[in-house]
Length: 119
Image (cartoon, rainbow, N blue to C red; front, side, top):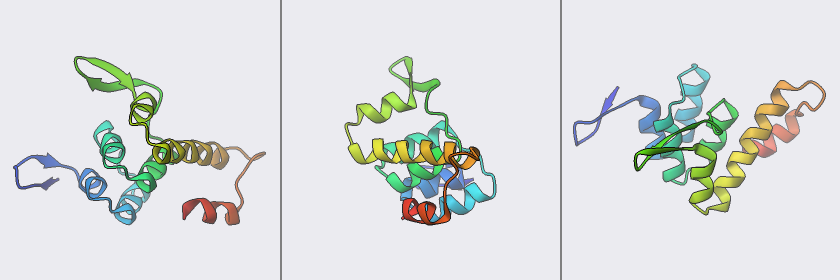
């Protein structure tokens, strides 16, 4: 757990996401650190497309109503669309496609394409 100047506790992955450190987030994801809604929201609110793509690819829940806003809840995908940021929408789409391609032997992803998408 990391502590910021306001004495609020944040996990290492939350802090790395808020600061936009995609390499640190990638290393933490490789170590099987969990993706919470706070991490997902920080990547969306911060406009960190590369981090959003990584965490969606690694299993962030996009379609379950779990974002609590104004007493109600909404799906993360709707929250992304509500930001009206085409780069964030594209990052989610790429992350979802990579998730499917990685698990499907018929439509598997080539190393060349994976390198291109990871850029």
